[in-house]
Length: 339
Image 1 (cartoon, rainbow, N blue to C red):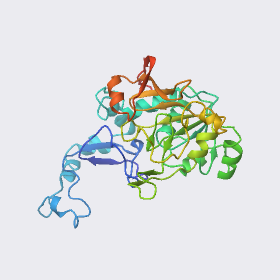
Image 2 (image 1 turned 30 degrees about the vertical axis):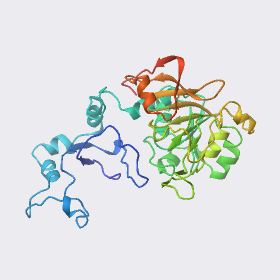
Image 3 (image 1 turned 180 degrees about the vertical axis):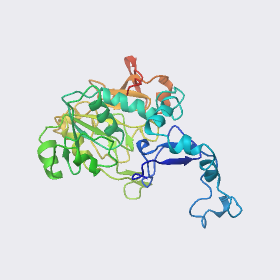
Image 4 (image 1 turned 90 degrees about the horizontal axis):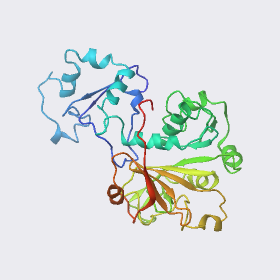
């Protein structure tokens, strides 16, 4: 699909969010999709028919599946196959792929809110996904001078024309000024204090913004084995400050982490300083509901802004600890159409 000039995707249902993703999930970025055909029942017959015969509808020889019937219907070639990226984007902006606010999705709200915190002179260690989208949005709007650094093979500073699919995407090296080795990036640039902002996410976070990307459940017999720390532990302690972007729910915002992979504010207060860590740590947590910032004294992550349409109770319901709100909680400005 990534090599095709146009791609038409048949789906049974359009949803706001996938929820927790499997590590084996295959995600297609929307920039590779030319058009969608929403076809209830269109996933049948599935490819592994031997294992799903109970759910496979019977069809007469030569009878097209529901998906085939829709895609070969008169007018489909005109409305779908010849639709370009602009038409697909117009469809999304008009509400075809958005939630009830009709102009943007929850992920887009997180991306824009994170991008707004970046400055033109920042040197930013970027992860794939929402962090990459946020940093490149900032680069294309209010922070054209921002320097982006991806972990491997450490191109610097890349200026991708499309969002990279992974840290090894060729788009990064092709558009970078230079490429250095990973040891040089970590030893000289990161541990040398030359990176101002690091973007992180996690499977679990606690009230002091400590992160878990290692296991869910006991370490020796976990319910889920996660990808691990990678470079996150070093990023969390060596970057000048940390921005965290993740969806909010009681499964991810927990009272106690199953494993501490990356240090946030530790036990709160001056714990980072007592451990000898001199950087600021997490200064902003952006979720699909709100923006959190650390309390100046306790360092507990505190709600400072609510996204449009989100209530205090909605944030409480999605948090595994008694969440604190700032004295004057602001309203997050919605994304402008240009974003």
